[in-house]
Amino acid sequence: MSRAGWVKLWRKSMESAVWSDPNLWRVYCCCLMLANHKERWVKVDGLAKPVLVKPGQFITGRFEFHKAMYPKKRKSNPSPITVWRWIKVLQALGNLIIETNNKFSLITVVNWDTYQCQELEDDQQNDQQVISRRSADDQQVITNKNVKNIKERTRTFSSDSNEVRLAELLYSLILQNNPKAKKPNLQSWARQVDLAHRIDGRSFEDLEAVIRWCQQDQFWSCNILSTSKLRERFDQLWLKMIKPKVPAGSNKQSYANERDRKLLGTFQTLVGGQYNENPVSSFDDEEFFDV
Image 1 (cartoon, rainbow, N blue to C red):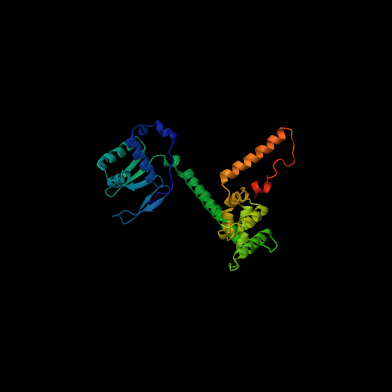
Image 2: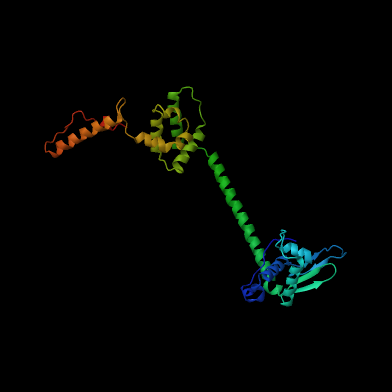
């Protein structure tokens, strides 16, 4: 039989004698799980005619019920006789009705209609409708997302757009370094510029500045050969671009010490009252802050 769906457990069951005995409670819950939630005919071995099983009923036997209770064989499991004795106790307490013949036992859960039947069936149908609607909604979201992705991949940029302009700029600068560079798909390059601007938040001005700088740099001009690589390395390129340069052939530490000495001399001249428009004649802004 199908194990789909669920059953209700009522809180007032905690006040019953069944709740106080773990074995009885497990047997009773097993009966709830095995009971049919709607009427159906069941074929029984050895009988020519199927048996009508109503809601709240199920057909079983001593060994079959024991297997349902303990699907895994363990030495600690109680015997089938013991488990069937617990079922008899539930019958004595008024929780079950047992009809037995030489082929099977038909067990009925008392008050099934009161606690489980129509409302439960309605809940299951409503929940299935919710699941169906949610599945349809989720599928629609996925479909819309896929359509959006397709539109982005197939979007065409006009020749006078910033995206195409920057793609062409990068290619023209690459050609200056390597006249044999293969012409790219400028629309694909433009899409990467669009993503850098729209998704990554890069301004077109900053993108242009980095493109011009990286193609003048000896190292990066050999590595930034597409707008996708430009987008991937943008932060690193930006930091390299704005970092002050140390003049070629200078020791970094001695260069910094010399710069500090000249700046200190200028400051002392100013605070000493002897103002000079050019107190350190050899001080050169471009020398120290060359970008």
